[in-house]
Image (cartoon, rainbow, N blue to C red; front, top):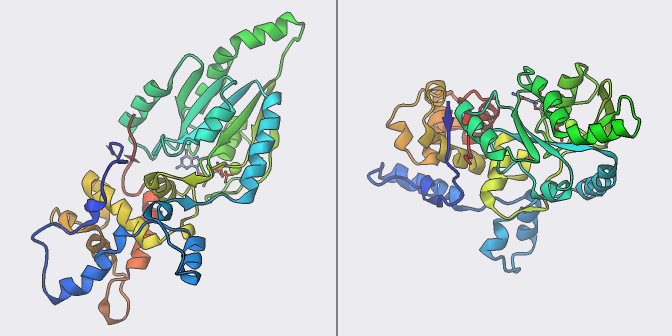
Length: 345
Ligand SMILES: Nc1nc2c(ncn2[C@@H]2O[C@H](COP(=O)(O)OP(=O)(O)OP(=O)(O)O)[C@@H](O)[C@H]2O)c(=O)[nH]1
Ligand SMILES: [Mg+2]
């Protein structure tokens, strides 16, 4: 298991080749590729625009912002504001591997007037010690934090008692008004692909909410009766208009909250390797048969090394780094490289 201290302030220098590395013709051939990580992440739309209009000056600051805000997200937000009037509480689902980057600041302000439960989901893939720290950090008077693993169902049974405790005064006031079994309504919110629909299916013990391993599955708000006196509103994942902090965009792409085809896959894999190389989880080393020496390679070369170790070669025996990049990202998303938390409180 491993966790990684918040890396927002880390420079790009991680991707650079360490001094004393290989030299000669091969090194020259690789130098161009090795520079790849210094490119900022760009959406496909940005790349196309830049290709068509080379005369438009692009500030480096502008280039680093990943624009990804499909139109339906604005609609979702408006709908959410309307539906908030109907609910007693809000459950925000976040990704236990990236509890900072997977929290949409818009959602926090949008739902601030409601009692809230924060579910740290996918904790089967996160470092358990880091998750415990996050639970402690997020728990406040008006917010309960609960670690859950909706894949196996672990922790899900803690939700109903936590909600009852949080809504105790409200339930009592309904009863005082003569309601015998007041129905509690909870809105489930969160970024895309974080497990909102899976959570509803788990808690209701039915597979009624559509879920799949890609962002943007749920498209409209839908009510579910999960138990007697208990209803839940499933909502589509909401992301914020732009990721001003490049690391946030990267981490959302690492975990699959944004479609990786809006970014350069090899570049993303190199960024992930910057982190994995330092974490050195046994699963990562074993899976790609990496030695301690391999871990001192510059991240692009490490990607080449992984391609070779997996027999991913293109004509001429060169490593197929694009294929290796897809494999690395897939295996990280499936926690095959260890239980990893990328952000600590
Ligand atoms: N390993 C693991 N996978 C999970 C967990 N919870 C959900 N998943 C998987 O994550 C993927 C996304 O789940 P969904 O429930 O569709 O996510 P969502 O938040 O509803 O996604 P959108 O509707 O697209 O916003 C699915 O493949 C789930 O099986 C978990 O706790 N652990
Ligand atoms: Mg969904």
